[in-house]
Length: 146
Image (cartoon, rainbow, N blue to C red; front, side, top):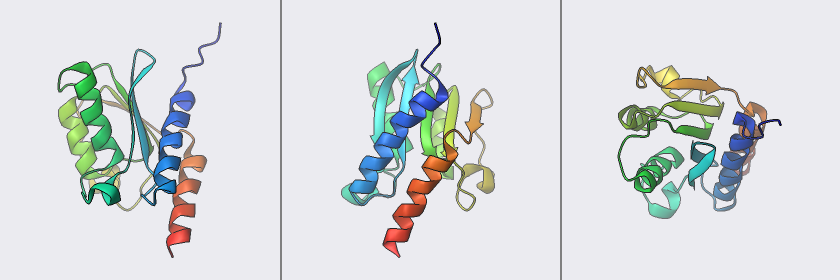
């Protein structure tokens, strides 16, 4: 039997969160954290609602997943996020020791790779999963803002 729990499957869950953020007027970034093919955190950007520049989808997901697990380390977890994490989120992901990060669209201006931010040495990174869908949502959001 074919495994339905692919990176694309979980990125679609993150995209659903990004669409919720879009509808709320938040920058449309969505994130889910998965362990053993089970979603344990499902979030999106809340910076506008919370008036908090640190309320990125990844930060919300880290907190939610850590609360679910009952510990601060996210070993054996995978983060699926629609946009490449910024350096703040990458720093938090470093400290969480998350095992894997899968992101959709690259952030060529503010992404952790452009900024030279290091992740934990054991963290695996996969980029470009549903990149077009993730990027198109961001483009639509900023087109509407301008």
